[in-house]
Image (cartoon, rainbow, N blue to C red):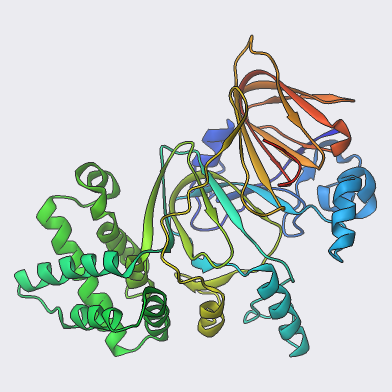
Length: 430
């Protein structure tokens, strides 16, 4: 069964006013449009056009899980001791300003944390509650804008030390204070290994205090000096001159948005990522990350468990964040696709919750076939496409979306345009 769905974009303050509307061929509302949710999350379940078989996906799944989800997903839910649910949430995300610095727990951490807070009597809606449910929340993002900027995962201590030395040198050369920068460099160097150094640095920075405030001020001032020496003062000019300057520009832009925030210095500990259109980033459990600017397709497990580390008015639990974070330095976790068919690729991370299919097809091509054993959500971002299954079909123009039940078994994609399709990770074999 093919069921047309839609939703109203979430109006978070960091959202772009025009990007989602422009992508989907809609008129801007004049307000921020940060995220378009396509899924069954109770916070904003996708509307079913025409109101049949239910007003929205969450209501349909609750009323008739067998038809909405299929036998395979119901069996997986039963085996995991869960109520019938759609295990993923697809979003169109448009960031015009930075989001919060955050990480998500593993399945084991989420289950333990949820049970611990329940036993302690912490209300589910309490602002200081960390675990809203017992599930993990891995995420991936496919860049739609020409550039998508993010922070993702920890860098090596050597890479951080190199940038700190450059900042200290610039400060000394200008006769400015660099004592805080040099003390911080010594702090990192004195730890027994990279992971211990990064853990100590993050927990110390988030603890705040006069020394942290001094370090933030010195870091920002020195970053301005470094960029001034190179004639760069924004993302575009930094990128054109030397991408290695991006961490310093990030320090300045984050401080402009959140003056004096300790996370300004934490940003130097992280990989500064610039995705180009078509690249994807994967954020597994324990990965610290932050979206800075750009338009993308985001796909995640259906959970609300977020542990924040800065750039937010929401609760920050430093010990719990440190317990969840993976402090192992690693390159930015780019997710490479596998080819399903000409023009069709699948991004499949190492979790069963979700996979993302990206298809670009032209008139006259043989219809691309996609096997389907679990519920799927499709959205067209360009052109006009025809999706055909075993029992039905749907036409999707730019900006239109559909929910697809697994009894369709196989999808053929015809027409000309671009399509994104979310389903479970074990539904599609490359």
